[in-house]
Each structure stands twice: as C-alpha cells, then as structure tokens.
Image (cartoon, rainbow, N blue to C red; front, side, top):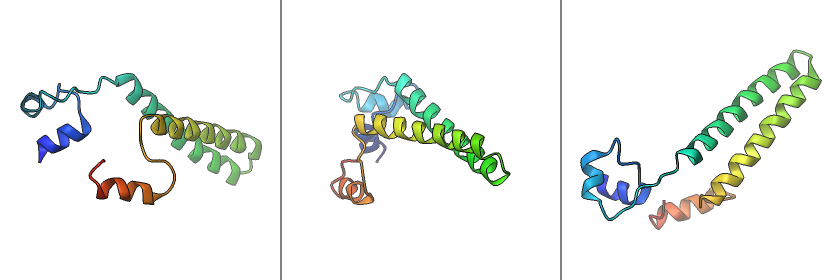
Amino acid sequence: MLRAFCRRIRPRALMWGSVARACAEVAPRNDLATAFLNGLAGSTMISMALFGVEKCLLGARGLGLGFLGIAGVCGGVLSWHLRRQGWPAGSNKAFCEMRKHNEL
C-alpha cells in the first residue's frame, strides 16, 4: 500500500527511505519552492481572512476590507498555482471522478 502511495504522490526520498528505494523507477518531486509558495499563500489567506472579519466586526471596516482583499488575492494565487500543478478545478465532482479512477 505504501508503494502505491509512493508511486502516486512521489514524495521526497529523504523521509521515505526504504519505500522510496523500493520504488526507484519513480522520480521524486523536487518542488520545495512550490510547496513553500502554496504554504505561504494558504497561511496568508487564512490569517488575512480571520483578521479581516475581526476588523469588520469591530468597526474598522476599511482595514477589514483591505485584509479580506489580500485574502482573496492569496486565494486566487493558490487556486491558480494548484490548477497549474494538475489539481482538479471547480466542483467536488471532478475530485470524486479522479478518486474513482485512482488518479489522485
């Protein structure tokens, strides 16, 4: 089961040792920069959305809307970047279809 996961996800070999050696035909992804960008965009999106809602509820609407705008931009960047990597866009139906055909 771990070998099937390793073939599908292609994790870095650093932490997967024996499983990665058993799946030597699968080239691991070297995308630390991509993972960093996705993590940064996601973390910033969540933080700005939380602070934006807080500021809007506490009366600083201009600042709150600015934070919500930044959250929207980060969400757009994250969505664009994930679609560029091959993640399904749109509804949950595309995700379910990929799981049904074991493409994810």
